[in-house]
Amino acid sequence: MGDRISVSFTDGVHESVALFNHCGGKSFLNKALGHIQQLRQKTKGGYGISPLDRLEPQTVMVDFIRHLTKNMDRVAGDLYLWQDYMDGDNSDNGHFTIDVTTGSIRE
Image (cartoon, rainbow, N blue to C red; front, side):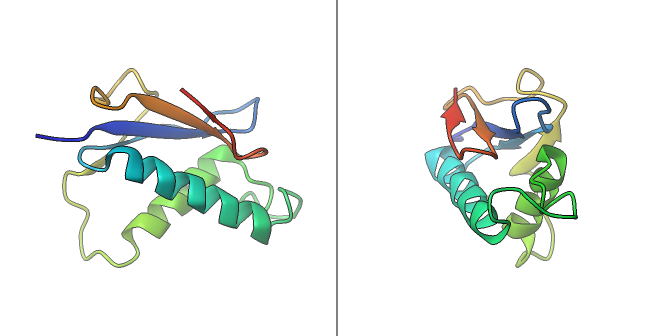
């Protein structure tokens, strides 16, 4: 059994790939929201030189995955990527798109 969910990041123009979590449920969404809040504070709202400083959605996704997996030896089957939310299984909780510029979510 799982607690399936997926998230992606957007800046209103571009959207990242979707990251699926098999067992994370709403706590996975809360981790993603917390990560965005921390990034927005560190980058002063998305102004800077690097893609991460500018909060570019694809780079934010890579950094979120780094954050999730930094203490793992290997990533098992709980996390996986697809082009968009329609490609994987998020049947328990659905898909959430997080706006990197505002921190708001859209189902």
